[in-house]
Image 1 (cartoon, rainbow, N blue to C red):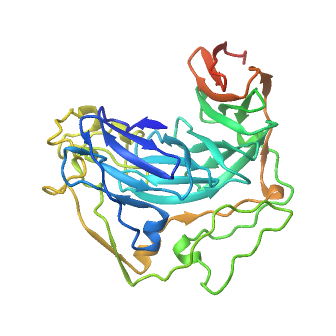
Image 2 (cartoon, rainbow, N blue to C red):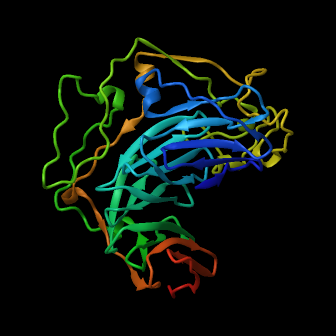
Length: 368
């Protein structure tokens, strides 16, 4: 799976079945490299290194994301955050600019196979082996609803960017049951859970890790097992953190959603200080195209200790029980292929679907 880095003509990211991701530059030559072992618990959860100091060779950066395979990746509209799904059933949210894992969500059961962002960046869709489409709130850091309508694994999800507004979001999904399912999400359309969730303060995994002497509790038969098992290391008083991309020239002129800004779309905002932005991104030669090189004032070093380290540790969000999840029912269910479906794409006037046999079909939009 490959995605272009938003705002760049040369950089792209590729994910692999061994749980790694590579940021590559199409202008560079490839060269082998050796990845050092993770030296801390934080790096074992998400390990980002830059193998080459020279700007001539790929990869630009190497990410160790999971011990198991990665299945899909999608950038948020802000061009900074990205969502990655994996065979381990986890949805990971990564701050690309700082190369930092921020949040981890888990599926109800089995692997997650597909992911997409809403046009305004407020919601995330996932689908997988639990036969469910799951809707997550990026701003509130929680699951919003489970969408029940498929009879087999969900293989593709997508928001309909031409049918989303401030009140209602249209999205669709396809699966191995050969069905196309359309959904209209609004809070008034949700079926309330049988047993509402109690409010539990969300803490980072650095704060919520159990003592090493306590064995993990086995899952009961009423609920499926959680695929992620969190290690229980000891934390040093000070942890050295790699240099951030926050001050790099590529990112001057826009800010992410976690910083103060007056722009509704940080990707296209400009900075009066240096006049640089993604609108003015210029193609550089291989000599100067390394956005990770350590020259000038492109980076600043940080040392995290105590509470500061806990604030930067990724947050593991617990799995919501079936009886505590809101339910969204579909508006349309249609069998569209004779073979299991693979993907769904919305266009302004049509829908495009693919199946496992390699067929590509174009559909007219349904009325309404």
